[in-house]
Length: 200
Image 1 (cartoon, rainbow, N blue to C red):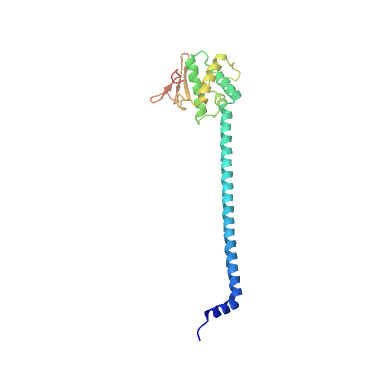
Image 2: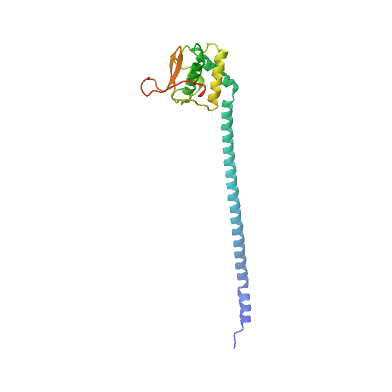
């Protein structure tokens, strides 16, 4: 007797059909939920990354803006600029009999000390150091002529102008001349500098 394939198939389906249907359903459900979970996880990770970078860039932007605003406030604080110019003018008062060239040279001695790590980092800190300036006093008159010189050189310094390096922090004075030098000792190898129309 030949094998009836159709009959065998019908018997197989009757016997195992429910089990097969359940297996197919489980497979399909597992695949679907796994795919959905994976897509959901990817979406969640992407959202977290986007949120992280958005927060990072926002903080960087805020820090940059704060830095720029602080620099701007220092650079353009007119009240501070006037106070500093007056302080420098009081230093210049001690040598007011010298030439304009000498006075501008001396002003740069002040700025160089502010920029030099061996001295205070503010105008007020530098000019009020004891026994550093000839006849300096916070009671010295702020003469218009001295304020003008101090303010002009101060504005140049704030603008980034630098006619001489900041190691010229020592001064040689005489009634006829003021010269800056880069060493305390005046010996071979010591360099000297004076303000001039071309470098100032």
